Image (cartoon, rainbow, N blue to C red):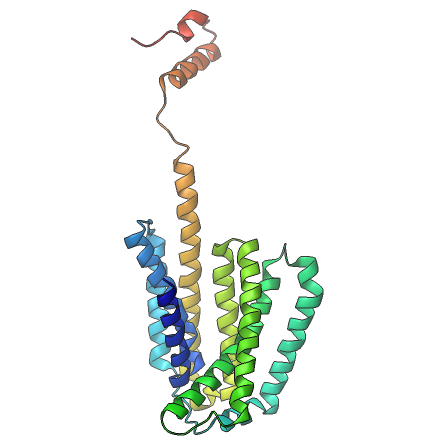
Length: 285
């Protein structure tokens, strides 16, 4: 199982090197569909009709985003990515993210971390948007290196690597705290929504993805993203319904003979008909 996880992360890393983050990140919802289908097939978990609808919504939204995604920006050096990261717009975004994360970590986590799910998820999502930009930069550097243009000689590559390591460690720490404290069915859709939204925002600011698109394409992409969010929430809500339905159904057991006799005695008592104790405990023939 660990091997599959490693392969999946490597594939996800490679995807950021060849496609814009505004396309790759929302498609992470497909993993939710695969997990639901595998759980239904291999673990015999019941897939509710609304769960199937959630899967369909995720597929429709993903297809919409793929068909209207912006083309990948042509980048010839990791220094070009560094110049994009050093532009005032993205520097302001990064400064705001760092400031909010510092406030959450040092002020809100000690006070509200155990009671408000948004505290942990806020840290993970904000840091995650920066980590994806760094992962994309590092992926581009490796892609250019493997194609014959060595990018490992630039200090910017090392800088992006350090940012990736720091951000991922922070994400893992606070995401694990969120999962240990709150229900996974609550954490997963909220984290996916915030992380994906902030990553798209960071990508739009840094790589200027929407500059190469018309308003119709942008609106269509947003509609596809909202469709994916709807399917994701529906899938997780359906899982809660299935779990609750299972626990509720277990309380409806076939009546035993003693419960039938007790019910009969209660009905007779309510009608004012006396019932002898010997009759109420008589064994059925």
